[in-house]
Image (cartoon, rainbow, N blue to C red; front, side, top):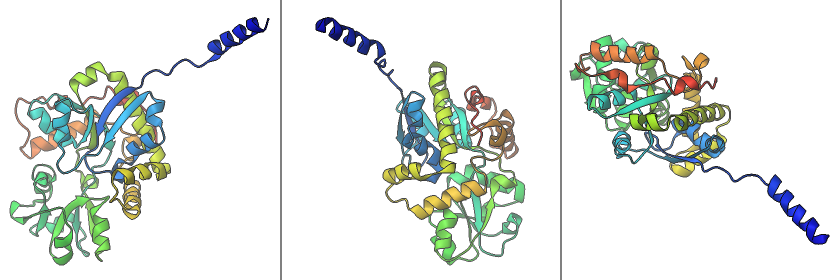
Length: 324
């Protein structure tokens, strides 16, 4: 009798025991720079276990000055990377089979920073502006077309605010979430012109995959975009978990800069503004991409016989709707 009861108990344990967890789908993902507030929602999704809740094992890597994410993506060393929309279009020109599936930033964070007293971006025409090499093929052609800037205004930009701090005539490029912070620490309250608010159209921090991955792993990518959007919603509400992981990945990141970056993303509605208000976080639209293509054609840098529409697809992000 005891043996029969023992067998019955064992059978019940087997029947009610939870089934083994399914293996999670692995994704190798790289941001476009060292860990910072601009990646907060992604680190939040990792810290809060949101990726795991959606059956994903995400290996979140940091980018940096020596990391070419699109090259690593094309070589099969990464599954998803973060890149500017114009970088993706440039890859299409080179016949690299990649496509953007979502956009982290609804507003491109690129800014021109001027000294106190400047009231309009047009006032900077004819005055020196520090511009990086990458800027020559992104926002600078737009400034030339829109405001009549000329190449003789350009000065080299070495990703330092020191020249700006000592030269009252110099303006410079930057991101709204970072460079003004360093300039304010240097004792100057700068004037900031967010180019997106003035009509500069490209998406920033898009999530990019190869077209082969898109074809073979569409459900995995949909869950990744969904979990990332949920991570951003959580981060904008309470950034503490994500910030802890950011500081672990980038020990040089300060609490002050993290708070500043988040505050600027909120005040300028970088993540949750525009179409995200009604279509959901990380959304994209054909109209916005086409306006970017029109800009490239207007400034004469779009190439003939290139199908730029391969640079993006709405198939994934249109199935995701996480409102801010």
